[in-house]
Length: 216
Image 1 (cartoon, rainbow, N blue to C red):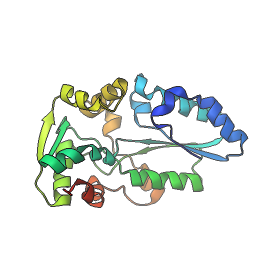
Image 2: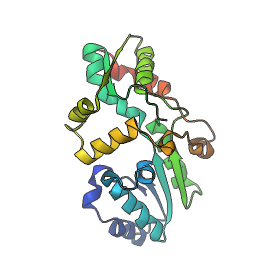
Image 3: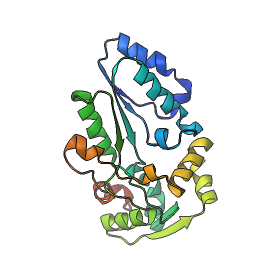
């Protein structure tokens, strides 16, 4: 079973869900968690993930936990600005973290479901740190169009993100992107260890998804 709780974690009982899966005959569980479950141990936003990790580890089931960094696909949030104004607006323009391609997460999850990865906690990152300004450059190359980068203040970014994210997640995300810990900046070897190839860079994600950013 691939277990992804997304934004519903506060309303769920981890022990009951994991126990029901085990009782139904599920032999292996792969949990999609987050690097923040480790790096932000007191963040309210990541408490549901920490509870699911703990429940899974206590369950007696065969488990694997995936802790990805921030996703390359978060850049989809820039689509309206790129299409309308050829602009990317983001905070902390020159702070880099090793973003991860969601396709790489999916491939690691598939490998964990089919292979022997019992009791492993994999931290999933891209191959290098990349800043929002560098992401904008990669997107510009992918769509063959110059893009202007506008650095938002923390307050400006919070105002935009609060339209579709709970306040606790907004604040934790801003903390992680603006002042990442050493673990949040570390490039992990786990994707290559599992898949036998390096993780995909952001530029590859941008090239694959260029059509979404082009004017219609």
